[in-house]
Image (cartoon, rainbow, N blue to C red; front, side, top):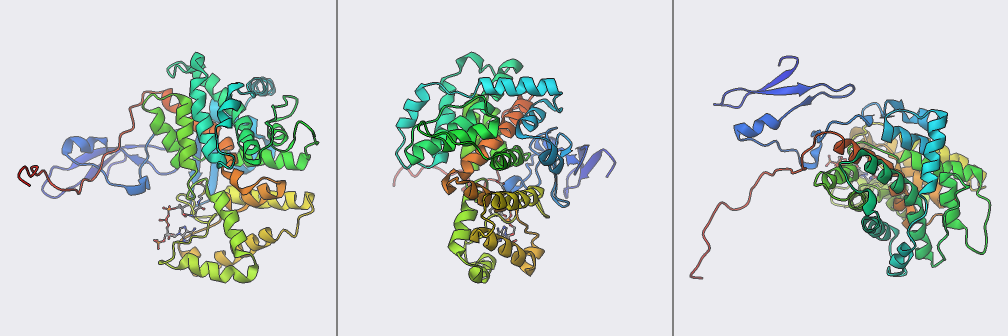
Length: 426
Ligand code: CMC
């Protein structure tokens, strides 16, 4: 193999030369598009070894447990930055100057309200609708409100859409919660910071406004920040695929929300808490570890394992530290679910099955305990993940539309019947 070409030898055929494209970090990529003219497709179920696009936004080294946004390590962003600054970074490629940051915060603040008729729309949902069902519908419905700025070929329109989505997602997510608990919707209070405002819309009522605990607000901001982007995961790839057809951006983000909902993806945070509740006591952990290892049992240890990380998910470490801080602040150090989670992690990390398969806690393992301690019901967990991830989805959508792109259209290995004639005389 030369340095910039790979050669594929297929018995009885001429060698096929495939260009190698260089990465800044991580594996280089063999371009397989030339295979088509030789009559071959590649086959990669689950796209485990397929780079579907070129991107400059986020890099993950799964073996080493590294996550970088625009080159900056997640640990440094978690310590020194905040969610809106990370939004700016993901969207624009560089950290803002103090003035750019203040302007960006101002823009986001200006877009926090949703059209009054969204409330009427919410009224149509059943009283106990799952927040993700409502969020998916409500974000899709936003396509019907913003005809002024959905020219996807106009970079300015794309940026306005990004700002609108980042600003309105907490408002919509909080509306899902208020509908779910049957309380009046709270309007955003633009004197508050982003995460604080979300907690205000969630937990305050028109009758009673309580101060938001700064430790809790910081933890909420961190939850959004740690979920902000994660390169080409299932929901981001869904947004890119939907976007590649030229669809309305709100419809694309609604598609991402739908993909996120599954328990193998963002729905895992809800599933972790349900699992910990079902385990109920440290003495039952061994039974569940056995179930997770049993090939004939569909049970999986939720919040464990990752397609890319074969080491600690760096976000999980930060989540665990945050969990410690929040529980201490709220006087819930002895939270039984946190105890079960910590013990479960200890046991799994020493178990041959998890060691051999390189299964480590992922971002969802501790996030639910933080959210539960704050008072957020389990059903809302994935909607909060979606709120934080919206900037990642929109940054990828924008990146795709900023350069030449083609409609996403995978091929298949067809194994159905060969051509046959319809039996006319049946
Ligand atoms: N518990 C028990 N066994 C597991 C687990 C688990 N959580 N995860 C993977 N395995 C086993 C799996 O059975 C398979 O075994 P074998 O090789 O013997 O068939 C092996 O490990 C490889 O798993 P896989 O399913 O082929 O891996 P994948 O890359 O297709 O799936 C995953 C990754 C995240 C879907 C999977 O690890 C999983 O289902 N985890 C639990 C759900 C979860 O926590 N999801 C959140 C992911 S992080 C946040 C996000 O992406 O939204």
